[in-house]
Amino acid sequence: DQQVKQNSPSLSVQEGRISILNCDYTNSMFDYFLWYKKYPAEGPTFLISISSIKDKNEDGRFTVFLNKSAKHLSLHIVPSQPGDSAVYFCAARYNTNAGKSTFGDGTTLTVKP
Amino acid sequence: DAEITQSPRHKITETGRQVTLACHQTWNHNNMFWYRQDLGHGLRLIHYSYGVQDTNKGEVSDGYSVSRSNTEDLPLTLESAASSQTSVYFCASPSPGESQPQHFGDGTRLSIL
Image (cartoon, rainbow over all chains, first blue to last red; front, side, top):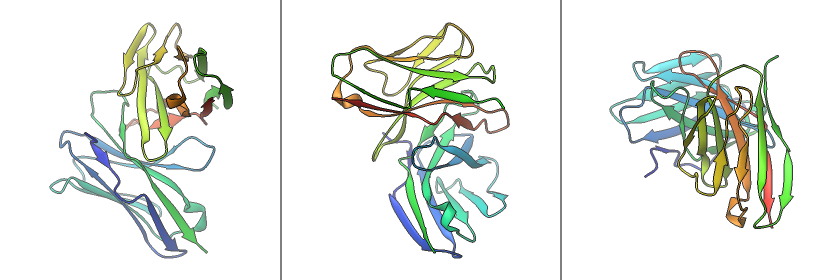
């Protein structure tokens, strides 16, 4: 059973508009949720995270929202730029497992100029 | 700068051969992880280690093994390569901080013919 799901394999947006990437999870015991960005031929890089005790975390153009009752989180990118085109992975982990994370399948974001 | 490096970046081998992928980190971190990435499956955990002489199985460990003889290295071995193990392999180690995000190497693309 997949505990972290990204139901949209791809998303296309226009430069300057908002990108919203979604992620659902099944285990309410997760303590942290993380987003990673991956370019072709490179490893994923950490983007932003949120603790389960918060409902929003913001870092520049990137904001993550957490809705615990719905077991849903979303990553907002405003404004979107062509350089944001990449695969975005949602991940979740427990506080006790020293970095071990469960990943979603990823969403490919394309930002058109 | 401290880093995590994987070698080789690309490898082609035949079914039945033993293959070893190298992972080396210079942070002196205890925790290291191996993931594989396949289209439509995101990142799946193969094996992980919390320190020297410690190894643990992940969700897709069949056909793989790891050893941890020092802090810096966690080599991944495919005992008898199968075509189903054609994939991109990523090594990772968590960064310090509250959410302990993974820091990934650039990956090894392995093709088994």
